[in-house]
Amino acid sequence: MSLKKIGIALAALLAIFILYTIGFTERGINPITPTSKAPDIDYSALSEEAAKDLQAYIRIATVRNREREGALFLKSILDKRGIPSKLFEYPGKPDRVSILAEMKGKDPSKEGLILTNHIDVVEADAKEWEQPPFAGIRKGDRIYGRGAVDVKGLGIMELYAFLLVHEKKIPLERNLMFLAVADEESRSIHGTRFLLEKHREIFNGYEYVLNEGGTGSRDIAIQGSKVFNIQHAEKGAVWLDIKAKANSGHGSTPPVSYAAKSMVDFLQDVQSLGNKTMIKDETAAFFYALGGISPFPNSFVLKRSRNPLLFLILKGVINSNRHLRAMTRNTVSITGVDSHPVGINVITSETSASLDIRILPGQDEKKILEEVKAIGAKHGVEVSARHLESGTISPMDGLLFRVLAGVATAVEPGSIAAPFLSPGTTDSSYMRQIGLKCYGLIPALLSSEEIDGIHGKNESMTVGQLKTGIEIIFKSVIEYNHQIQK
Ligand SMILES: [Zn+2]
Image (cartoon, rainbow, N blue to C red; front, top):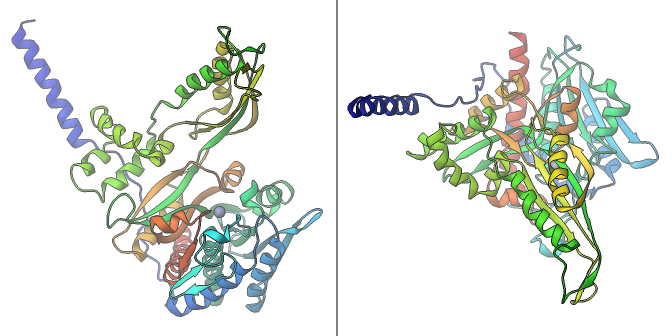
């Protein structure tokens, strides 16, 4: 081939690539634009009432315990409206109680919808807070307290939406459940996992779940942005204990290999498991959504996250942000190293470490364990699994996902919805295992500071956010019902 022909061929290839780059974008999500007519509600007046209940609920300090009092509080609100409910006590632990209320639909055998939340909260260090964390104090429009967002705030939004369905006598096509559970913050043994193992029948006929796991956000990453991050997937966990053993010795005459050094070499090596950036359909749709509210040229790149050339640009952005990194790769955290030191001149005979590896949905936890073991064998360290859990995922085209995306963005003009893969886990990871399709959304727009209040200091929610949340959940239930009817 002559040089000229090669030149023409290369130019043609380049032209094809440019056309492909301009013409081919990733696919976004597919929200349902609501077509149902919800009854007129004075949400402002309603949210004032809900705010008082949230304050009272916060005052019941359900710190990894005392869910019975929390459940009885919720029961009293249901009782006032004549809605029956049922308590589930963990055997032998009378304080660990979950509560369920249900409204029957025309066909209770399928497609039921669950509104779930947890009653327990995490600790709060009062010294750090501007307001006492368990006093339920309101300052202006803002209610302070542990659980205000995570997740008593969501619990009250779901409860009020549930009460509205009852009060307005909405004819339901399918069952609707309100479920507030114990023990979510300490791995759910006395709450959701107990219900799934010992009361599996309560989930019969249900298909969709609205839970925590995602939130709306305001001005995060992009100024002026309003994004409803709907969680549809959670990463899995591979928790490992590592041990290195060898002879002890004098620090002045080290052997080529000894316990602490083997461990350090191993820990260096094992981090390669977190090197690979992976963009699946869902993550591509997440970047696509962000592209919709970003200025050019970011918008162009974000909508084409898997274009081989543009990916090189995007990769730099992903690598510089720990949240984006966690969404796009398996991560390896060294959470403990101990050489059991005795004196500065003594090489000890044993070093132990712990690793917290989080894996993307679709990755095989057992295979990852084998890979770590192989790296361990190379360095002569022992690897044992403390806990293995696969990631979970619910489809982006699930009816509830599409309804939440459509309703939230209709209630909050100028906002967008995006699929969100969360690095941590919620009860959805257990509920997905029995086939329920779970989506996580606290449907209010939170600032970065408000999101930091989750498990942090000064956790708070405004009455306005409560109002938006009740409206979105109520209208989502109505639209879901309407879509089933069609
Ligand atoms: Zn929570």
